[in-house]
Image 1: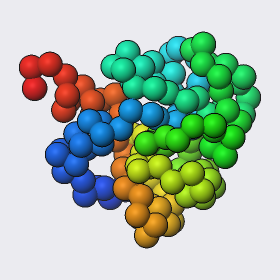
Image 2: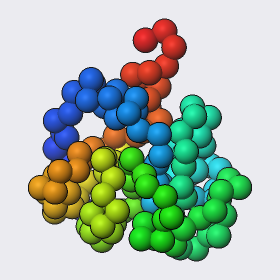
Image 3: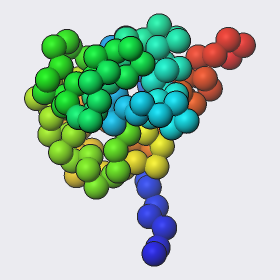
Length: 146
């Protein structure tokens, strides 16, 4: 199997920092109940930094004490960011849902990239981030001492 090369998303540190500063409400698609998985500890970190997280996982009714939604279309709140922890090949369907709820940002976690989803969202005015960890980027750009 050949290693898939993910192109850079082309966003500057200032653009990424701006996302964190201007965004407070984050829907996490694929959020996990398992505290050992990034799809659990990354949103837990974001919550600890004051962000409001909405778990999206069709197989959970609650994660970290928060109501879990079956899909983005079930959300009863406006979100600034859709943060995706799903395999790259599943991202296009998530992007199609996201288009209906119009977040400002669609963020694919580290190792995740779907070109068709990126094009669809960007052509509709949604900023797209890929192959970056929200926790790692927040720590790198906004932790004290930086």
